Length: 336
Ligand code: NAD
Ligand code: LMR
Image 1: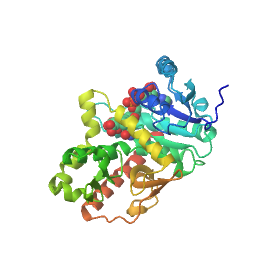
Image 2: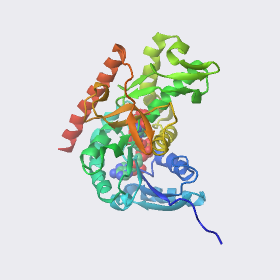
Image 3: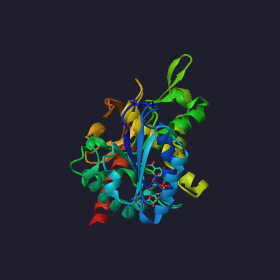
Image 4: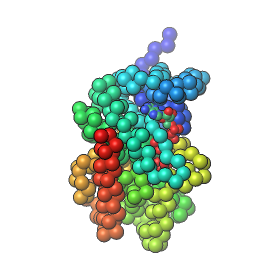
């Protein structure tokens, strides 16, 4: 007889699951790319009434894929039901921006969703549920979720800036013509918006003759201080222009990377970027969800401390913090 002696399934919520990121993300989760090849999954899929038929189609395809790790699918338009006992919550539901818009232009539609879903998570999710907000404006939606779910520990609420981090790795890899997996320790500071600051001052590349600094290898300070930064900052807009839709595959992949590293840990000597609740580190005001370099161990993230910040970086880090303070005020006014 067949005896299942493996791990207990984890329940993973994906909101906005009938949308384009959802369609890329759910097979990645069901194939073990987020939580490992030995971790059974039960998927909880939430969307809104007009998308219910499409959501049922996604559920049908998940069944048809016969994923060995997938032990169940809950597809619903009821947020309370969707949040029940979930261990991981990936919050993708909301409205994406279109060409010509900034991410904060979708603020009023999206922050009220995060206020409502905060309550559903607070009441029904498993204790220590790890939450990742993807929907834009991601940092501010995560902050609203935190403010309206006061009993959820702030260490459990994060937002996605890993896509920007990965975009920075990709640009350096292209510039130096090296395998992207040899590039590490870029930093994405601040807001997932065009004020974000991709910083390579501490980044390195593994070469045959040891680890070398990206600054030294690129040897083009002008490019690093201008085109590199704007390319990463504007990449979301460039994808929208090219695809007429916002990034989905790369966003889904980054969401998997974010949760995988958070739950299973970052490799020794490597950090990643996550939007987390600021504690005053690096002089960033507390009370914002701000992207910092973090390492993760045993399911907990901690901000990498003690990195030297030069004047150029300081200015850029403060500018993106300033935008987040403004967004927070706009979000509060949208909710009043
Ligand atoms: P999409 O429009 O294809 O899908 C969004 C889905 O959310 C739709 O199915 C919609 O019906 C659903 N939805 C709307 N309101 C909801 C609610 N209250 N509860 C549950 N579901 C709801 O959009 P997409 O391309 O999948 O993008 C989703 C979000 O992710 C957008 O806000 C987009 O800007 C953002 N995004 C963020 C990043 C990042 O790096 N942080 C990257 C890419 C996209
Ligand atoms: C992205 O960075 O690709 C997403 O946030 C979508 C967008 O609006 O840019």
